[in-house]
Image 1: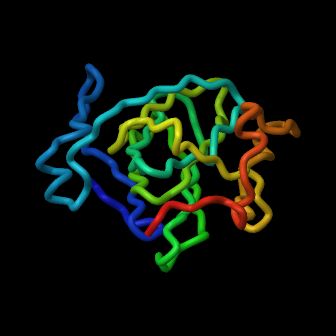
Image 2: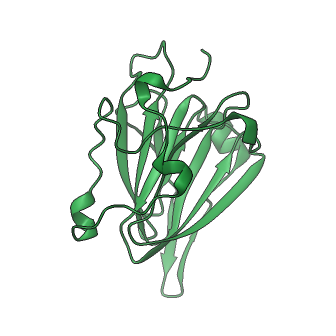
Image 3: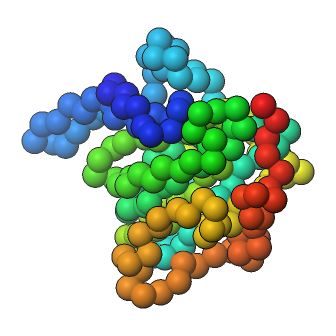
Length: 185
């Protein structure tokens, strides 16, 4: 597995080796020993899958109390995936990075605990799978606005053909970054 560093401390882009022939391809996408040897979590407790239409923006989500690390992959389609470092003593605190995840690339994004996460669907539809290191904890669920002026995330909105992103009611009223309740250190 190829593991690439990203601009955010501890966020990694993972690309499993593929073995292709005229029948198609095969890839080992998770191996507990390989993950452990690479310093990545080797225990996940929940798998989540979403299906979204073009222009849907989900996020920026995180949890207090039971923070989740996430291993994210686009099973189908194309998403622009964003991680924001909420760890107050991190050298990349308050910084974000965005990644194009597509079904063709077969890449995973590892986002550790202490980060907010969101994505924008750029294809007609997208199916996203993410494994988490902690269970969903509704009492701790939090959201930062996707268009927070202090974060100034450069979402590829031009690829929406002039439309605004489609948000859930909850995501539309997320907190501003400077007012957000952040995870403890």
